[in-house]
Length: 355
Image 1 (tube, helix red, strand yellow):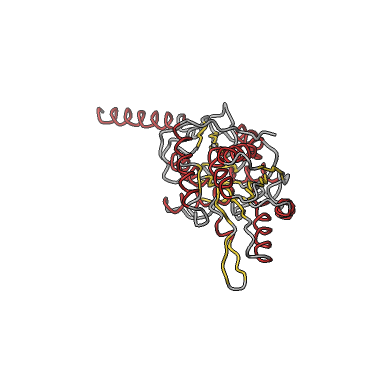
Image 2 (spheres, rainbow, N blue to C red; image 1 turned 30 degrees about the vertical axis):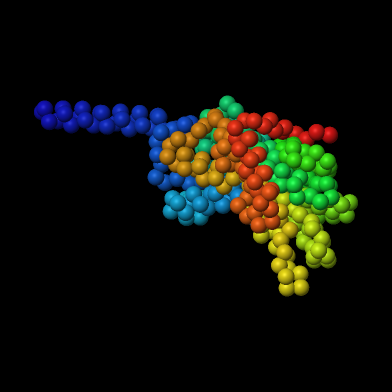
């Protein structure tokens, strides 16, 4: 009889424990429950995972996470959904949720309205937005960068490299985000070369390489010899134009400063058997690092829901690309000095350009 009573009591405890566990297992807040079967997806902006820039960097970070965690590409591991227009954002986010992904990234500020909407509807799924801030939602984490800091450093490079004192900036859109790139770049140029002029223009989108090339062509023809392209896929056109000029006249020094990833490979051009590279340097924005970091936290049950994580020079989230073959020792030294000043808080960098 005693054994039967004990068995019933134990069963009651187990049932109660199961119920409590079920009630407390909502996975959309900062949880301490580590998941063994964890899956992650990202929804791209219109640039796509082969934009050689922002989206590609995010995908590389997710691939690295998959490799480290022995996950397979696909439904129960890691994957991406490509957006070809703004209309795809909501559809792709919903598809990722329906496919059971535990964490879903929205790559780019353009996805902010869609993530807000879907996060309210799908509260058992965690979301992360890159390059915007969504507050008040426990199932959304925000990732931002101090683009102005890295852009200041490539501005120093441009200011010390230009021979014409005519420098260009081509942005994807005239937006708060892209103006952080422009403002930091302009300030970096002026810090080392007050005589230099920085012309700023915008493509109007991140996936129009033809227009990017057209703007670059006009700038180079006007005497500009260094262009910083912060324009996603539209920046491909800037590289194309610089390489065309180099092919026509190898003695002409025209440079492109890349963005988001080390874009040294984009600048390779061969003329009559001789190899050149028109990439001066790149402002690396470590979206890959951010995606890898947050994915690990989420898998370990430490998803920072409702919080914003910001990456700057101090966090190694932005900076000069490791490929620096076209930089002189003088330029490299100046970059290192200014980098330390920024980390120390000795330099106040604007988040938008001056007229």
